[in-house]
Image 1: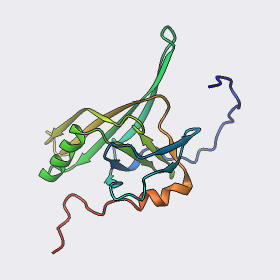
Image 2: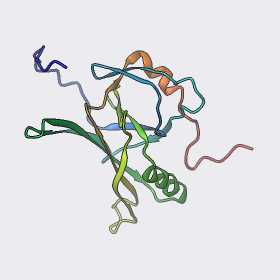
Image 3: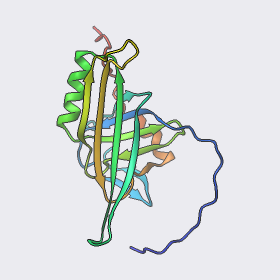
Image 4: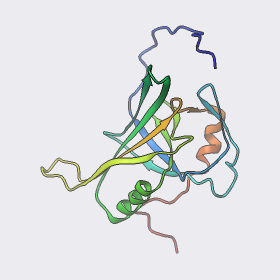
Length: 183
């Protein structure tokens, strides 16, 4: 791998909105991801029935933060990907689904307000590293769940290629916590 810088960067326009609006979880597995220059360009097994994304709509104090961890002495570098979710309202179904996220090692597709989808834990999955279940204390406090998940990857979370987004989102399972099962 070449370590030679190849381009500069100009100051960009102020047309971005911070935060994430959706997180799609995929049970960990080998899906044949093709990642080139920080972009997920293909998923080998996207047509398989086992490729099911589960959508979590989020707001507020939810986000993805990536941090380079570099050791000059050891010659190592990796990116710590920390996904923080805030899910208002306590209920048993959410608590049970979050338990499965905590016990598992899912891959997280994180959609921001700028049309980007990034894949956190693409190669190694995301591990739950903390969270709370809270009733709150004051009337305006959060009553709900927070969850923190961390992935450690060699590179930053890849962006999903625009050409792949529609096929990816077509795999979202239309089943949500609180929905009444159809008869």
